[in-house]
Length: 253
Length: 313
Figure 1 (cartoon, each protein chain N blue to C red):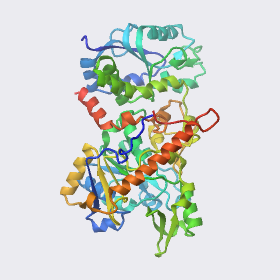
Figure 2 (tube, chains in turn brown, red; figure 1 turned 30 degrees about the vertical axis):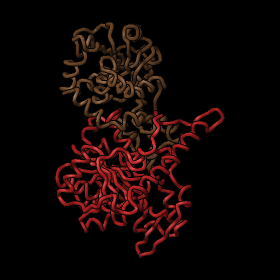
Figure 3 (cartoon, each protein chain N blue to C red; figure 1 turned 90 degrees about the vertical axis):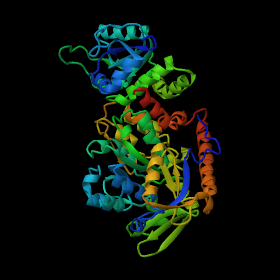
Figure 4 (tube, chains in turn brown, purple; figure 1 turned 180 degrees about the vertical axis):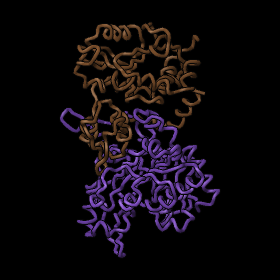
């Protein structure tokens, strides 16, 4: 027990899809909880629901700034966590909650939603709508190695998490347009197709080998840009894909 | 940014040979030694993969509309030699799709859908070095690729100096080589030339000096010539005509290659014994890497106190 990292899960304005994605690790989740993670609080999956002092907090959902409780919770999460991970498109970039204009029952005055990075400093992003069980798992294992591992494991975890930390530094807005402004306009697109595969709403097709976005369909989750090998790419990490995949799978046995 | 050291230009590999398919029928459809087609045909037969993502043609797509993801049903709008990513499940389909198209085929775009509506549990995928990078990033950082990574059963990379937009190929073939796209039987880059072979037997060669300006700009920051991240990677360079150079890189690649060899799928020669051999592969790889590292350096000081973005961290 002493060797586990303590983890919390704060649930703001999100659809619980991120929670389900975490749970969809099935046996892997049980291994995580057995060996590596002491889950201190989490609505839905744990008895304790109130925010406590932890090593790592995962935050699902954006913050409704018209909701005092939500604002207090995100601030408390920051104060009580060594590392804050924005889990999923809403926490990272606002995602579908960017389109809110209020008026919904039973809180019609709840109209303004912000990604958590607009209110607190966020350390790591796990983008995606929903984020994948595999990326959540990888980040959880790497967070454990970072805090409890030996020097080599810490180095590996640092290298692995670095691009997700850089994504957290980069900002709180995302759109298909990022592919245009930061990849194609920068002369970096080579037409691999990863963006189209990553898009959860099939808003991206390819015309003559370059991404074509149906921008009205885009939910601003950031999956396309972050999946693009020309958004960020670490030779150090990706060249060792075989060893890293094996290490993660072995850790979850 | 991680600098690729000289000497690492061929990537990590367990073995390297010069190889050719023993399937004479298949070789008629193949670009060089028929390595990709033979590997996938064998892997399909043995159940190592249950389908493969390949770059097919309009003819293939028209005959097999359920194997592609394309809304456009107006086939007259799709040009000859435009690659269309497709899923093949049989050797016949594989052969119908074989051959290098020399323009961009976003094969990775089918990677997730392959496991969904196409129902694959064990995916084969062929692609350029950058596409192998996309595949491995998708495995390590699956942002939008749920349940995909573990389904990738065989990723075959092809050597690549650069790729072309479709319209570039159109211009090279129709303007420079003065041939109609639909009359072209095969395109090839080799021996320092771009070759266009017509269906009636005519051959036109263009010096690469002519083709350079038509290259896809995104290729100019690529630091991988021999698909370092494929399970197996292959290309014609280094081997005699009709043969291909093959690097076996990962555990998966090693296992599949050993089984395919044991099954008699390939004849091989020691790479040390063939001309021009690995020396030429190294030379071209180093040329590509040096040239593109220079491009990356120039991008860092491109404007006045303003840099173009570097994708590598």
